[in-house]
Amino acid sequence: MDFGFSDEQQLLRAEVRKFLDENASLERVREIMATDEGFDRALWERMAELGWVGLAIPEQHGGAGLDLVTLIVLLEETGRSLFPSPLISTLLAARAIELAGSEEQQARWLPGLADGTTIGSFAYLEEGDRHDLDGIGLLGKRDGDTTLISGTKQLVPDTVSADLFVVAYRSGAELDSVSLAVVDSGSDGLATGHFPPLDATKRIGRLSFEDVSVKADARLGADGSAAETFLQ
Image 1 (cartoon, rainbow, N blue to C red):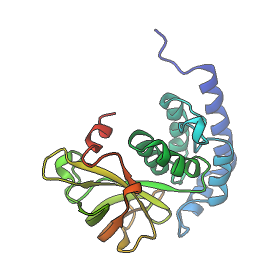
Image 2: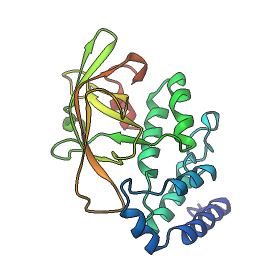
Image 3: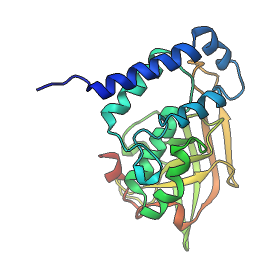
Image 4: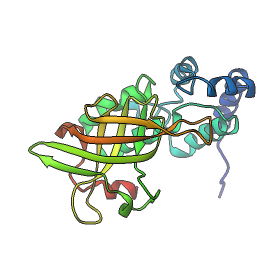
């Protein structure tokens, strides 16, 4: 059994490495790190035009529809060069919407994430930095068809630049009553705070929710169904 990368994946690696060697020298990375946004939008747009941002997003929603192993090639090379970008956060947001969202929701958000015009992030961790479902305390209360979310998310990547956040919140008393929703960065009641970076190539922050209103069409899947998504 061959566990190596395919010829096509090795070609992608060579293309990504050439692009980063030409555009993301260590000196250039230091310059990008010092900017307010922490990434170069022009380079981000070029990566999107090359199809790399939407590499693993389904073709019907504007992506290349390639597998996660091929995505690893891209992530290895951007990591090797310390390239600052919202790539991983956008990929995580897109993956959550693909797995948990309806066809209508995928059609609404995935094309923008695939072509780089929308930057996404995934808000999961809270106080204590727990990765299990017990660590989710952000509370969503139903008010008719609307959910009001209150609480705090910590260590959220790319809070400075994200246009939307896929947010995990508690929708019931049971351990696995966890739901997902897409929250726009400009939502009323949503405040963003930023941490001094330990890794200056990545912007990390917190999200504070005070009765942030989430409409039914922004909830991904049925209430309490997100635990299944985390297992995929």
